[in-house]
Length: 214
Image (cartoon, rainbow, N blue to C red; front, top):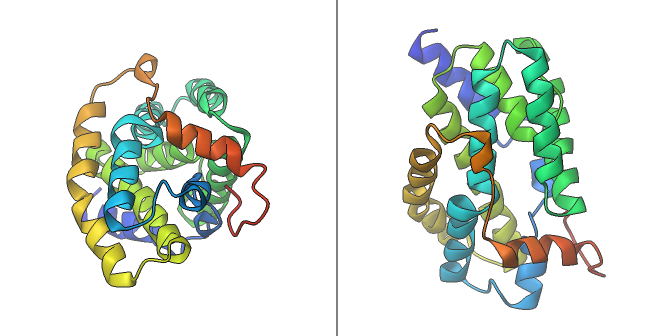
């Protein structure tokens, strides 16, 4: 696949307009804002950076790479998808990744569709089948993941658009670091140390007033 065609695909699949429903999920950030864990630009940057390097961002990158490599192996994709489902640390986290993955696979029908399951598995399988470079695939996914969290924070804190863009720009280094760290990582390397983020996801389940599904 030529680089221009691959770029067009990535722009389409990770555009805010691609109907994965990502805007409805805050990844526990809504509870973190309510609890005062994330209250400003600096706090948001630190929160998302930790998720990228030590939490779901890192795990998703490993899952995506595995699905990308197994794009033409249906049996392997089933096993990777089962692992992704089991690895979710909270009910809402599982709902978040499965719902977005199913929506992604359905929306990708014009490009041949994908394996319906956890979001990184659906995305990785499609990009692998389309011949998109694995490094570009991981960067596009992690950037979309980061941008969605920043967008949620802009609405929740509230944070101005300019501040949100500064955070997104500042997190580019963390995105690149997460991609580098997961290159060659096996599925056994999945795991995280973002306990406060996981607790936020669990406590959001019983949060009385909320705008987001997670």
